Image (cartoon, rainbow, N blue to C red):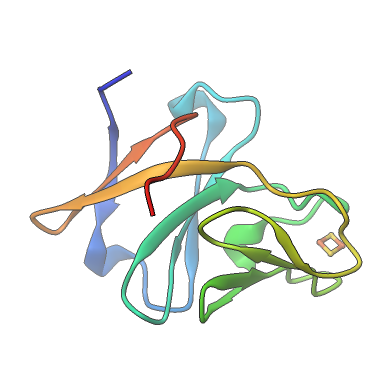
Length: 113
Ligand code: FES
């Protein structure tokens, strides 16, 4: 699985925000949220919050975590681990690479930190 999917450019997603990449494009079970952290890095998690049915791409991204817009659960961007309740199930991570200003998503590949 060495073919990534180009999902946009770094200028498309402001720092602290995310974008939903539909599962029809990624071939995954869930949509994928590509998230732009406040340190300038990009990360990807399954878009649907593990607590209920919120889009993590619509949450707040800050200091290595994304906060769900509905009940404020937090997930670590690098590992998907829950860092704030009420969610108790970790999120699934996917690898993202930035090359020459383009964002490439590698669905179902584990991120290299
Ligand atoms: S839907 Fe995300 S914390 Fe409840």
